[in-house]
Amino acid sequence: NAGVTQTPKFQVLKTGQSMTLQCAQDMNHNSMYWYRQDPGMGLRLIYYSASEGTTDKGEVPNGYNVSRLNKREFSLRLESAAPSQTSVYFCASSVAGGGPGNQPQHFGDGTRLSIL
Amino acid sequence: RKEVEQDPGPFNVPEGATVAFNCTYSNSASQSFFWYRQDCRKEPKLLMSVYSSGNEDGRFTAQLNRASQYISLLIRDSKLSDSATYLCVVNTDKLIFGTGTRLQVFP
Image (cartoon, rainbow over all chains, first blue to last red; front, side):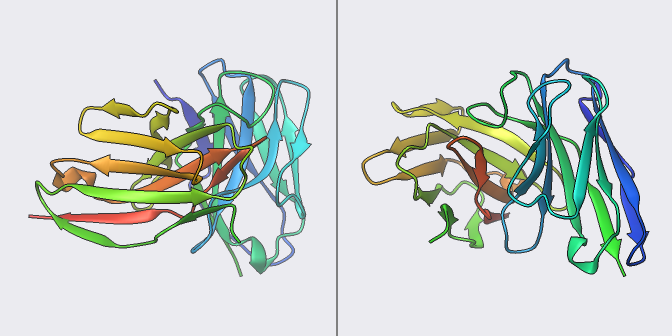
């Protein structure tokens, strides 16, 4: 019972490099989310997908793009990485569609990303 | 003012103690509330939802005070395994996470 799976677990990039963080869920959830977590700050929503085929900006979308590839998969892309994007990234999903509100979310175990 | 505020702690308590955390929120239109638990370098996990009438799950009790805009989490008979960071989460049209309260239970 995998739940929400994120790859990679760790990554080090140089400034200006690009990469894609992968996320897949096997719970048949409709909504998926990408967060970042930084020391002293709560989890902040980057982008979300309320249902297959839709994506919306969250609180901190600048410098990121997302793709909801199908119902199971939601990827996060950094086109030109910057040191300010050094963070722990969490993917999450929730059963109901319609977006982030009013329902608990299930998290993957995170991607630790360092940008030099 | 932050949308969700928590005392960062740490709260250091002995096994068997009762400990309580509070969390205040700024948006009176907030619709639902949750407590999540996060172990060091792990993902957040849902601990419990918080209902208007208050709710209990084993040793854990959550309460909501809409008039004063705070929620609380009470842990009775603390165990070593309760050591973690507890995140208060408030929903408006999206989930707003607090920065967490760290609990350390010692033998």
